[in-house]
Image 1 (cartoon, rainbow, N blue to C red):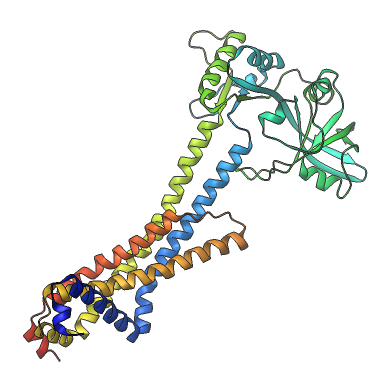
Image 2 (cartoon, rainbow, N blue to C red):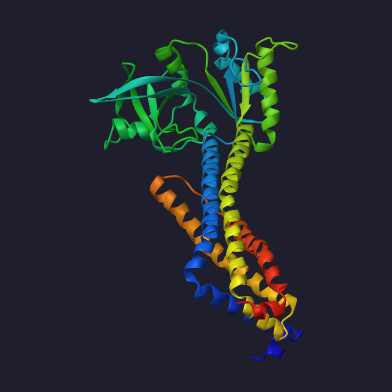
Length: 420
């Protein structure tokens, strides 16, 4: 290939010059392997850290969303007691303000409701044979199955008849089944809850941990009236779970619930409610905002390594310009233009960024899978952080390589040829 072809202004000549510059840049990097690797190290660590940190943040976000969604779709929670703007409960005596009749009124009068499930709960020790276990006993109605997106793995769920006649029947979670019955089929077996005998009629399908780390399978479900009258000796309910018919009616249903309860509890004017109504859509939005902020923070901290890597590129390119001063003078003497020399050194800087970026992607994905496998954390790898971090690494190489490249291109050819 002749110098005339390389320096010609034709597209073919420009293309040849570009690939020749890439070849020269690659040879320069290969001839100084250790220095090149150390230069790329900042980029590799930076890109890898960004991908790994963002994947951890996305994993946390996905776990929180899944956990909240597992509580039930379009779910609205009604709990007794007023709440201040900070969410702190007020008035110690207001925690008994909800009743079964309130739940029935909500189901009857509020438009757009799919299901309503009042419930009470308390920790009890259960005994089966020579095994015992302390768990949460939840008294509720058959609608609880749909409201909380539960699935019966074997047996059946409680019925309206069980609620009406206060039957001593129980549906147990997977954790309870594993710890109390081991390899025995729990359905049909008998357990004692607070020394009262109950017949196990079903086992729930496992749901795993909630976002707060609570085991959602460590539970026993019994009829609401049985829990109220035969176990706890109460007449009120602790929570009313309401499922809106669809996502579009959640706000409307929430407002309707508030109006019905204010009317039933004779709350007028600007008096504070003696109950709290929350919908999980707002909880989900808050959780998403929080986890997104955490992910951005982790990614930003990791991205600092990329800036350090960029400074390393500038440093090594300045050394390269000094070492190749005579080469630059010869090329200029043969007719190389300012743009030719500039492109030569910019390509070298970009090549460092590209190779470092690709190696960083491999490192980041590897770290993410390692964390997921050994630490047990959920990680989510998406294309966006990979593309952004790689583009940033190339941009860093271009930005920090510009000054050394411009310095090389501005060298006086006579001074460069005289350089020792």
